Amino acid sequence: MTNTIFRIADEAGMMAFGARLAAMVRPGDVIALRGSLGSGKTTLTRGLLKALGLEGEAPSPSFAIVQPYDLPEVTLPLAHVDLYRLDDEADLAELGLDDYRYDGAVVVEWPERMGDRLWPDALILDIAIGEDGMRRLTATVPPSWKDRWPLP
Image (cartoon, rainbow, N blue to C red; front, side):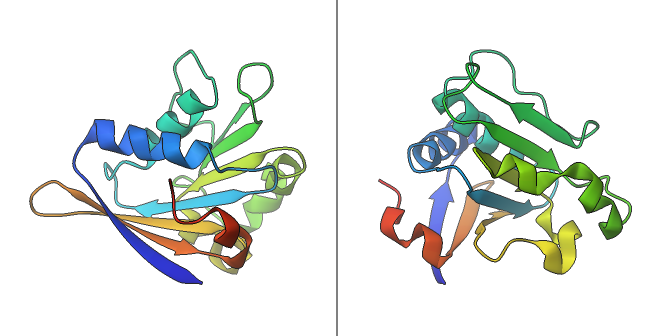
C-alpha cells in the first residue's frame, strides 16, 4: 500500500475531491473515511454522489446507518454507511454491507468501528483538521486501486 497526502482548503475543495474520486470508483470498491466529527467525511461523500448523478440532497446516514443510492438516481449504486452509532462490531453482519459491493460501491464513515472486519482492499482516507482549518487528507491506496491512482 502507498500513501498520498492532499491538502484541502474548504468545503468546495472537499466536494471537488469527492467528484474526482467518483470518476475512478468501480463496482466492488470500498472507500473508508476516517476523521473526527466535522472533518468533512460526509461532504466528501456528497461530492462523490453529486458526480455520480445524484440531484437531490444526500443526508448524513448517522441515524439510518446505511443510506443506499441506486440506479437511475446515480450511475453507480452506492451505499453510504455511517458506523458512528454502531454499538457492537457483531451488529455488522446485520447490515449486509457485502451485498452492496456486488454491483456497486460502499463508502464507510467511522470504519475503525469495524475492527479487523474492514475489507483489506479498501481505499482508506484519513482526514485531519489543521490549526488553520485546512484538511489534510492521507490516502492509503491498496493494490486494487494502483491502476487508478493518483487522482486526475
